[in-house]
Amino acid sequence: MPRPLIVLLLLPALALSQGAAYGIALYKDVGVPVAVGVEVGPGNGTVEIRGLAYYDQLLLLSTTFACWEAAVSSGHDPFALNYTVYINPIDATRALIGPSLSLAVAVAAYNALTHTPSNLTIAYTGTVTPGGFVDFVGGVREKAIGARRANFTLFVYPALQHYDYKFELRPRLIGVYGTLTKVLRERPQNLSDILPVAEVGNVYQAFAIATSHEYDIFDNVERLNQMVTAMVAPPPAEKLAVLKKEVHQTVNKTLKLAAQEEYRDVLANGVARALSYLRLGEERPELATEAYPRALREVLYPYFYARLLTKSDAAITEMQTYTDVILQIAEKLMPDVGSENLCDGAYAHMYLHTAKNLLPQAEKYLRYYLAFHSPVDAAYAAYGYAQVVYYTWKSILYAEPPRSRAVELNKTAGRLAYYVNAALNYAELYSTATSVTSPQLLGDASRNTRLGSSAPPPAAVGYYIEALSNILTYFALHPSFPNTTAVKYIHFVDALSHTAGGPPQLLYTENIAQANLTDINETRVYLLAKIYACKLAEKLAIYTDTPLREMPKQRATVLPTAEPGEESGEYLTPLAVTIGIILGVQGLYQVFKKHKK
Image (cartoon, rainbow, N blue to C red; front, side):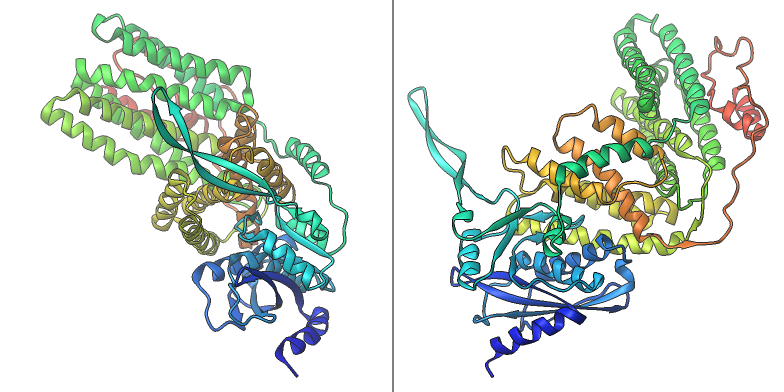
């Protein structure tokens, strides 16, 4: 019996015990069917491909994420299973098998995981990426014709590919000279004239088609809007009140310093920026956790700079003491990471780790300034110390008591590292293959991944979530042709609606509030991708019943005020020590008083 017939006879039987689906590949510019079967069993997330004599790394990674996203979508732990993927090109043993087959793999894996009978009258093409987005493929029209020739009743392809997008060089007259400019040309594919078709922007839409379920994107977007309300956590009012007072005190000290004509403009600009951020936080309380730390950084930078150039010895004592005190306070406040504050706890540790990493660089420029007395080195040192203060305050604001079950941070960080490294490798290979690069997003993802690999487990989880949000943004908008961002954003939000929900966290509050202030662009997607990455991290985390460590108890309900005359003294008193006093860390205040003398 010929091999193709054997495959066709086996697939209906496999559909009852395994998952099966059909993809479409290209062979000599002709679309040919590819039978895909997926077998799932207990394991550790390993994906094995059988049936091909050769395949490249891009096919392996796309197949891997197709299986993992199918597991996440169906409520399974992707790293608790192994996946064996059988690929059999029909009538073309040398067909060009690439990442466009991964949508068929995802459908087959989903059918296996949910024990759903496979509908083998549908042909799929699409590239599955981290987060479950379905990206563009090549040869869509040829594949549609091949699907019709093989008598499929429906052809499923990536959203927006009913147009063929190509850049062309066209002449343009500028004065008496001519030049060639790159112009995007959109040519209708008219796929619906070939056979019935359906567009999908993420795997959830493809799974609905495979299982014959009704699906409404806009209902999901509306549902997400309702879920967002429940995900918003109230801002830490007591800490914000202390920070606001800190900003006002620093502003007053800076204005007094601005009486010197030489640095008046620099100091006045810093004060103006700080007050604008304060006003934003007052008008939009949900933004205060970002606006108030920025306000303090904006005013501390010129303040430290002017102090270094006028009274360097006093400035050095002030800067070092100030940062030492709030770093110690933040260290005391660092919480355990619980199942209901996984992201907030991880980000608190990540911000503190970032502050500690920035401190040696600030100290280096301070040494350069003392050696060479260069205003440039003074500026770098002042900005470095202001950055340390900013990230330390972010960690203090995010440090909330852990809730619910504890998280096994070593195992969780290891799982996230495995997922993120695979996703980053996929993104870099895909960027090279498609010539659609994003140095900023992928560069930030690479940097955060490196930081996570060397950070303690709680901070590492935060870095990996940051890296994943960069990667998700890249894939959600790829390939970012003009006039496609809005449609891709809808499909991104639709995928987010399937993962959102759960207990409120400060990370959600802050990023949702910032996203609401931006247009539909890369920034908005990136802010929401942080929430998406956080929810994926929660799904990959390992939880335990180990009791959570309690936070220090409050000893006072009213914030103490600075001592009389302290605000008008030569040194800037960090009102952050009041948090230390509230939490019983009175020794830190004595440390500051000792340095001040």
